[in-house]
Image (cartoon, rainbow, N blue to C red; front, side, top):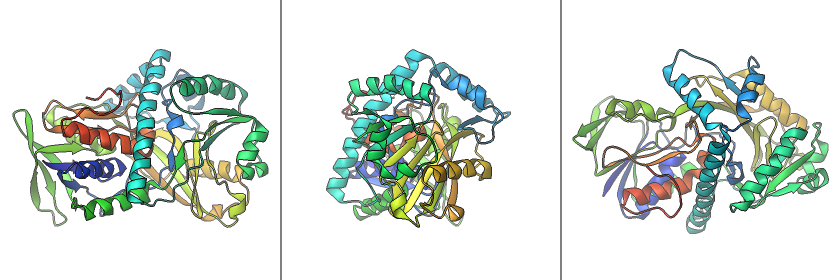
Length: 416
């Protein structure tokens, strides 16, 4: 079949890889000049299956209330006159119910475990490079109540196939010696030895090149405007080329992997998806004293910050801000991340010259992504991965390719 993939982030490119692997004629379309320049560009770098619990959990509402008015709050709602934001927020609160949180956690965990297996297989097959490390993820805790709650979460994940261990302070220091210089009091941690890290932007770009070598066509700098519908099928994607000329891209099947912008393409054809942007920030610190920087991938549970070693750089990403489609940098939020990381690893890098970035995570209220069919027989979705797009990319791409090819994916997941 001829398949058009709309979006060249990590989700779209992994989907294109598996579609090409299945023998399809694939074209990827994106408004950017290269692959992976939006949400995939400077994320936290974690392949964190152990972070399957969604933001929508029983503790979230009181934390959001506690953080109201704090410009540096880990989770910040900026209320807007936007019906989509209010609708998303109400659904988010419903997903905070304990049973829904448990169900969503296990759903995300199954996809995460599957996706990690797919990534390992892809890496073996292609040798794709992306500054990856296979050293696990250590989640550190500085709050006693949060650490106690983590014990129950560890038991749930471990009982469903995710290897995790509770670690004492000395054990945390043994796993990551750079923490011995921390100015923040750590009271314990949890360790997921099978989790990984790596540069999602490098991965996306390098995999796109491997796709191109296999015959996948990339139409960059093409703005995707709308879908042409005839009855129960999409006949074409209507785009504008770099000179502004209108083109109709015809295909047998179409896959929407446009992240936070998916609703703008889908709503006009009667498909309403609960995807809303959750803005996140990252800072990337050039290392001046690598021996003082972590070699493990870390997660600071209380500050909600992911910290990854990417070669000679240290990437720290975190916070969630509901503020529509604004991608401007907020210095207060970037400074909060930098300050926390510098306290954890003083002297490790040139914190004053850290590069700063903000991007939009395409989140569903439950954090469970939307993968599968739509009301149109040849239109498929692969979007809404929230904070876990990098973690879930390969599994989602493989599953989307299976569904487009008429096969049932090899995992238990609520595909559309």
